[in-house]
Image: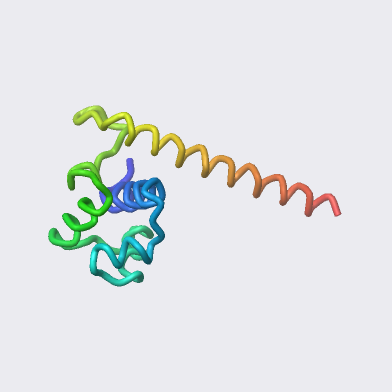
Length: 109
């Protein structure tokens, strides 16, 4: 079961990418440092309530949606949120598949 920091970091990363923003652009729009956004996305830091609201506002979601875990059914996420999670899972799977293919290729030499 993922913790709140992990869910938050994943949701921010997914929504940021879906919005076409770099970490630097998100940081500028939220008036925080790029390092701060990097730490949040790495689940090393949790934003203050003020920054939490800023991030949600810039990403175009309600603050509660940033900590929504689609695997739970208590509060149903919207369709966009579910689709973004699925795309993130697919992207990770593809990245792992490519890594495995490179490992196999490297081992064959």
